[in-house]
Structure formats: C-alpha cells, structure tokens
Image 1 (tube, rainbow, N blue to C red):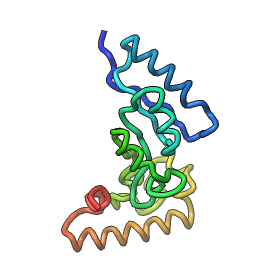
Image 2: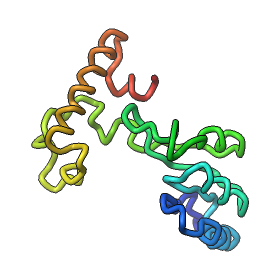
Image 3: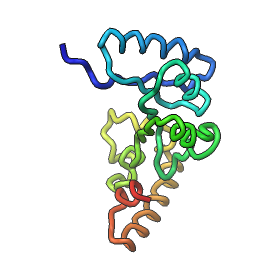
Image 4: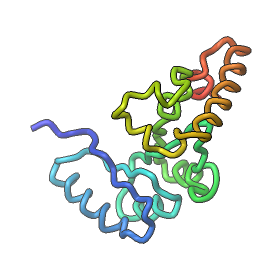
Length: 156
C-alpha cells in the first residue's frame, strides 16, 4: 500500500477547538502508516505550540502575500518565530493573491461565472478596484526591476 505523504492538515483558526485532540488522532493515523507527516493550517503561534507539544509538526500552511501579512503581526503574532524555533516549515498559500498579482484580471467579469472569487468581498466592487490599483503599483515596480509582478510578489 502506498502511504500518502500528505493529507490536508486541520484548519486551526478556531482557537477554542482542542487542537491537542486533533493531533492525537493524526498521530494514530501516522502510527498506522496511513500518513507520513503531520501539518496544520491557519494557526496562531499558540496553536502551533500546543500541537507541537503533542507531536512534532512538519509544516504550517498560511495565506501569505503582499496584501495578507497576518503571520507578521496579530492574530498570527510570532508564528514565524515559533515555527523557526520548533523547526516547522511555513508553506504559503495564495502567494499571488489568487492570481490577481499576475495582472491577468482587470475586472470581476474576467472570472468564470462559477469562479469562487466572485463571492469573496475583497474581489467585489470598490475592493476589486482598490486591489487593481495595488497591482498597478506592483507592475510599475516590477517593470523597473525587469521582472513580472508575480516574481516581485514571490521574491520581495
């Protein structure tokens, strides 16, 4: 039987949930050979520490991009420091802000009719227009550096 190297880690944004109990269940799966590694997503520094106290955590997945910098301050305060101290990798999701950073989209109408981004407030009305202004700024800076906006978002 092939052992999956990864399953989606539990989302721990609800601090009142018992992360310890969740990790205990994942440890059982690991001990049964059903998973190799344990990771969590959307957690605070405190949740990471609590989870790690039960069993070493291999990775934490968090949204991180030029507009979503939560891990650099509250509520994720100290997450990078805690992860570094524990030897836990941080894996960013949506580093290109759900492709907005690429400059490909200039209107909500550019999204397919069933695209979930149409439902997200940050991509509606005035918010979308404000995002495009920021993308324009990124495009200008990227052009000055001779790179794409996506490369700028990933490297800076």
